[in-house]
Image (cartoon, rainbow, N blue to C red; front, side, top):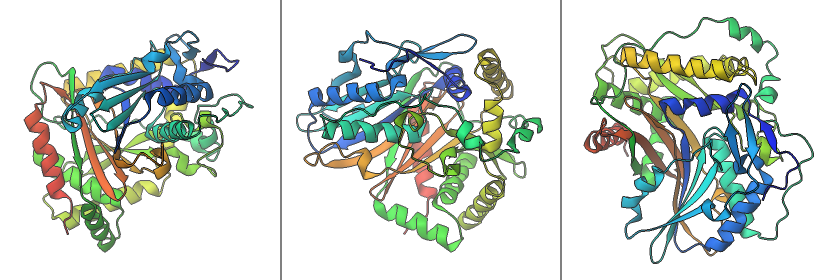
Length: 430
């Protein structure tokens, strides 16, 4: 299946870190596309095979060792790439499909789930975070759609070695290596975590809200009035909801981890090579917020100012330097870092909430056929073990979709549904 002459691809520190983060939760991610009709699964299979030929990591397994690598799987069962789930109610059954993880060590790094009714399919392109970030997932979906539309398309030839590292990004910041000597971030404040009951959280569920277009219009207007971005407004509403739910003491700054795509620092953020696009180029950085009683507009301004303070100093670059400093042969130290994080979170009953605003899903990411209309599309991200929480946001055709995955029964269905309802209520209204 894999026509690449390379049977092993070195896993850079970013891949290794996202693989090690499995100790804190499921690192599977999902591109969800709700079609208005039925897709041709045979043609979809051929498209998936073409994608694996063009992006060898997707048809590989992650091999653990001192210097981990991606190992090709030439005898992989093609039939396992697609799984069909019959359904009379896709909206009801979607969380069950999203809870099916990708096993990165066993490979491959991608599985296509079809949630099928008598007249329509919902496609879930499920991948592992060790292989790519959310923007890499969008690129993967774009490539899959292109291969589906053009079954005779020839795979792009690899003329250069695959570089999945952050080297190209950091080349624009020659002084950044000095950031490694900065003081490590403080531990999260005691109790800053989503409310969870004692016990197991290994069964995963998802809370999903797709909002009408007028909601995004209202968010944009509210942001414009305060000189803020859509992301600032989302951060403000998310933080309000967290404070309402967690009840942190006023005045003490608490962190919200915000993701950033480091491709923003590249001269050409969309290089020709899919291997250098479908990879990990995103990190998260802590944005400190104060849980004082404030109006909605004041919190938007506060969130905007907090984000601006980071933007003035190339956000994400310090995190990138930190990860790259482990090197390709530092996997044992990476696992130790993750183990320390888990121990600290447990001791302090704290796990900084995560916000990932992935942005707009381009039409080409869902354009499988002109005969297949698309009712909705969004990304569902990783699931952090309780008491952690991660909110993912995407925009498609002017509508926001908010998704949170969580572990039950430690976090109950009712608790998370109430959280999402509160979050929507804190968003600006028309």
